[in-house]
Image 1: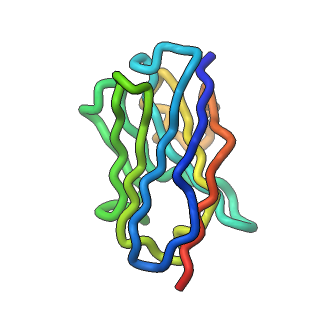
Image 2 (image 1 turned 90 degrees about the vertical axis):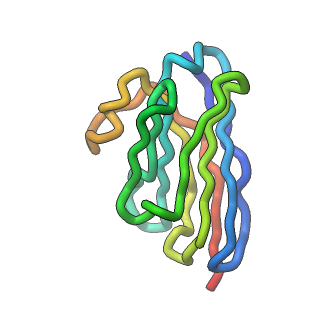
Length: 125
């Protein structure tokens, strides 16, 4: 079972950029489709972005499309989330996820294989 550790969160002002990283260990990283989710205070966790095993496929929530970019480096067992033009409504704990089935990220009730512990992103206005 793969283990995931996120990093890169912090406090930034609206309009700034931030890059999150998620390092994977304990599994064959290249066999997993990877995704990012977030959970704002008092709200349910929501999907942000996903990327296929060989980076040919990416999928974004409408709320972040054009501002966020997901990428991966299979040599470093790491997936990234580049966040630009951040807004106060992007404030949330961001979680990394892994699953061998890319299509699960399109299913809001799917159970994914692994989750990280989360990293907090706070965007001030």
